[in-house]
Length: 213
Image (cartoon, rainbow, N blue to C red; front, side, top):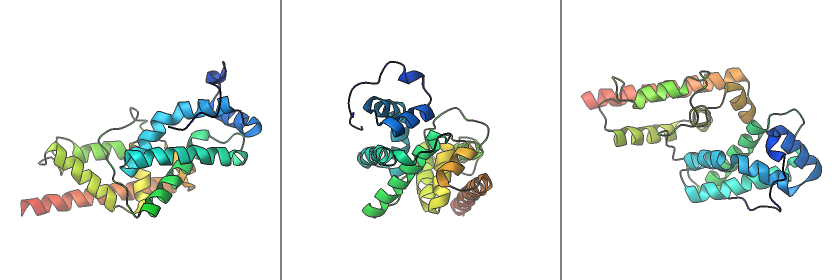
């Protein structure tokens, strides 16, 4: 993961919010404050990048580049701004840039979710229905086949729809957080998510019809 910049986190830093920590780092550049932020997000953010990129080694590089950008752009962080969406926006941009340089597309897996669901997003419910063992359109497929279908289908979505779906499903982010990350209105987040899920449903139905022929 990201290499430490200095001493261990000072006593009491763990009691501060992400926003307070980032404000302190912006104003003072203290290594222990930076290390506390890295510690809080290293597992969560790395998992997101590994799923989005489909390459643990590349995810490691992008993770380090993300926090390098946090360091370089610390002066741009505005007081009162939520830190988590700001961090995810940087990470997503770094991931897209890394894939572009490598001439690759994301290889996404939706078989593991983060969090228990906020009730604000319908993404998890519908994807669970698509890959579940009920009467959904993919119910006749074996588990491995369903997961492969999900990966292939997500990869076929337009990049903006794919990003929205991954953020809503994997990271269990609220609409307003996704809007902050993608720098779009909340209404656009909802429409992108709806479009992504509709396309997945269409692909699943088309695949079922083809399998019945």
